[in-house]
Image (cartoon, rainbow, N blue to C red; front, side, top):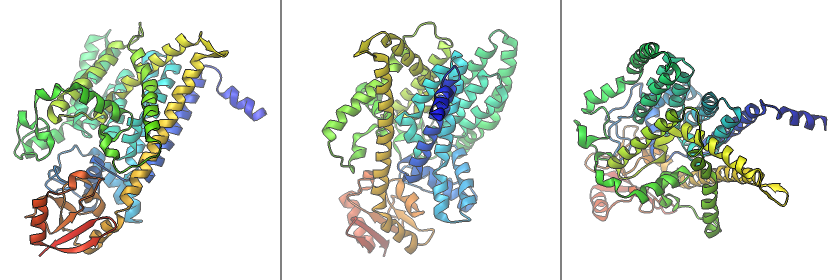
Length: 511
């Protein structure tokens, strides 16, 4: 009883929100690291880990080494890859499997570090520990942030640097903030959109001293240029376009992209329902916002689970809407700018891709969290005077939101576990290629993830490859399924050297 009383006292008083935030941060970090440990890379995370492993093994950044269809040229800002490669190199002295496991921990590490930064930013903006805790809770259990922090996507990585840059600018540590802003540019191209927010945060800190603001901004701009622009210069020199492959239709380039990024049309904007639906689904954990990504998963009671999941998303998202209507909000202009520039970025991506990925907007998630905190606080105040069976509705709402948060965390755990098991089915196929093909073998394949799994480069051009992977029921990466004429050419020019009837995988070698 004495220990219980001490625990209750620990959560009392003004500092209780800081302590609660600490608990949430720890839980969020454990969740991210645990899921990353059991996860298997998919999508773009395969490309990033393949590139990091290449850097570690070869001591150089790739350029024309093909890691997947549409990824024949390495153009991505390499900070994540360099950090992952360094970790791979250190741990590989023990074993290769340990090194590949270690690389997967980079994303949850930086994703977890973002949580205390969200607390600090919202506390700095509102001078309120309670609101800061609410915002931290939102990000800690947001399916999009959990998912991006679990797999090796760059988005949670770059979000740490953009969030740190804004916080440091608000704290008047401008030069250090500029370093983080520059490092964010060296992490992913869409970090460019944080720069207006960063310089406006400097203005917020020095609005009463305009001359100081100008001097600080000029110094910060110089630091950002030194730390963040070199890779854009590299892409301009080697590829003829600093943003390659994006905006290729506008800026051109010396190499024509094969991926969808080469498209561009304003007409893509005129399908808002599809884009909003894709964004909302990914925001709450559906990979790439596509229900088709669950084609390999069979769950019982799906007809019941789907409506419950949709209801949970509405309950969890509702405070964001209410937050926009809270009056007399300090630094509202900064938060709106933060959201607007990344909304503009999403519109640009839609015109370029004819689709929208919610994770691209993760650098704006602290602003969303701030509005969620305001809305959550407003809902609680409105419901506190209403009761059902002598229980305040505010308490029921808190229970509902916490229940949604844990349900989302559980759903992410189930999703990651099932996906990892689905990849494990093909482990014998991957092992065969690793053990029976030379290290410099080029394997015919359309997709991104085979290259990571077999530690070989891949290309879809049959005239260039030595081996070909064929699996006409490979639902984990459906784009890899080949057309009949392509399969005919394989059977003409290649010899079947491996077949696995259990998985449907055939591997061919050039005659």
